Length: 259
Image (tube, rainbow, N blue to C red; front, side, top):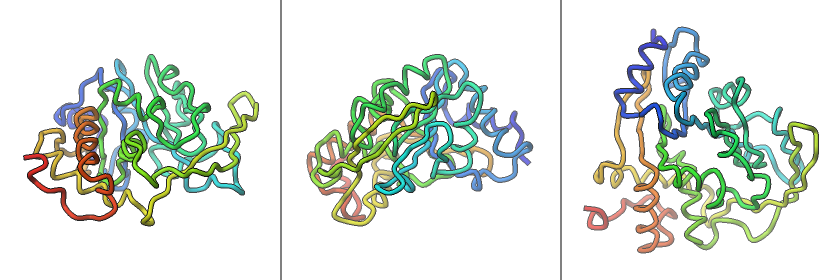
């Protein structure tokens, strides 16, 4: 059984620094048995990253829609796992007000990081939290999670103005703020010519390891991948300049593009 101390040691070995900005895509099931369960996992990351910024996605895109259209910042559950739902309710953690792609953050400048999301009208805008990960030279940890859960690549496609990735139409959504106000927020949504473009984001794995942008390790029992945001985004932008429709299929990225 894993303990907080053993998790802390694994976090350090993987190459995460206490002062890092770290976003975690997670699978609690993959971590295995931990003394204290999911709360211990969050305790370990929160303690280790106390000088930095810890961020977890708390997305609600699965349930927020034209009919069920009020995003309650405090009460709306995340659709991306148990760790995200426990984290968003912890003391000191703040959640962004984005109605479909919110994140929760813990750290000295967490409020600054999550601020302004209620003014955004697309899922992953460059001046929102996902773009701020690039500005902060953040790292992303795929904690027992597949690399196709790489939300920031949705952002890269949006920032690169790839056609047919963000809708031209707006959905009439609302945000219920922690103080009870209601904000009207028309929102564009993700779209693509195929049902789920993110299922092909895994093709980035080979280039990321070849360029030493990604590192493998373990947290608990979970096979995990740590990725540097800036070089990953820059490399993906270069790939998209070569082929804007890169992620519409799962064909490998040509090795001559990155070797």
